Image 1: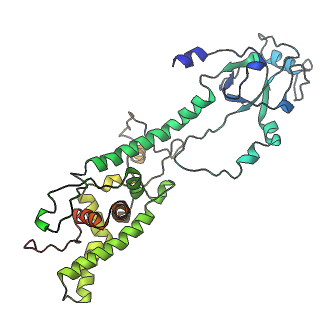
Image 2: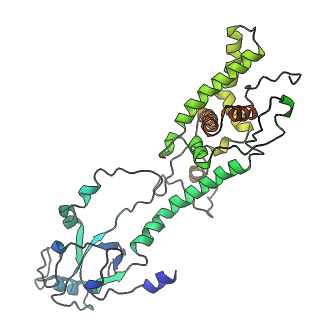
Image 3: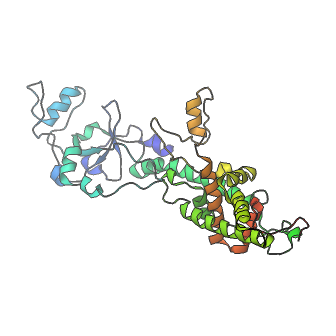
Length: 344
């Protein structure tokens, strides 16, 4: 803040002070547009150069004449170098998603720079409150806050495993299966991928984990049912298996095990009419139901939650081993460990 205060209304005194790392404002403009300097010698102009644009005054011959006519109280040095500037427009604010870069090289061509550049006498320039590096950091801050919040919830999911994800040591004593805990857990990045839908626009999603988890779920449930009912018909086993692996049952388990609210569905939008990001410390006016829902609710079908459960299974499978994954599934409430009513 002290740096910003010291820069406030600080004038640029000479053309040699212009830096590509700085930001500038033309103090006479009301909108206080931010500019960067264009260090291209071919684009340099002097205040004594002819004014090439249309004007209603016959006395305007040079750039200095134009700016002195526009700002009568300002004296422009004759034959001094002007600043070649380019306005910053629509700076990137969302760093959560990749953006196309195929046309990036063409944007910096000489023709484009000529079209985008403007010239101001040094007398009209002030330093902006922040430099380019600070501005980029400020624009990255919303994305950083989103990631920190997401990782906080992921860590809550991991750290509260006694309530949410209890894992037990390997034992074939069904009566003791919930008594002991281990530290085998997927890492935060794996869990983050497991809760992330493709609709978020992230660089990863849970679809691969979902496929893996779905296959392992069908295998383990089938083996458990066969072990328990070796003489049952194929139709009977299929019916029992469907009850376990159905989307409806997986959704029910997600609700029962308090996993539902971890699903990441909506793409984060920071600005505009579709903005849905709520900065830390801000609250929504409950009277505005539409605005409130957009910022505090996500829309997802029930299948999305069942897909997340399958993705969790896949995440455990690639992070630990078969037995740990099966114990996680058993904790969820899935019939994957053949325990009889007598505990045998």
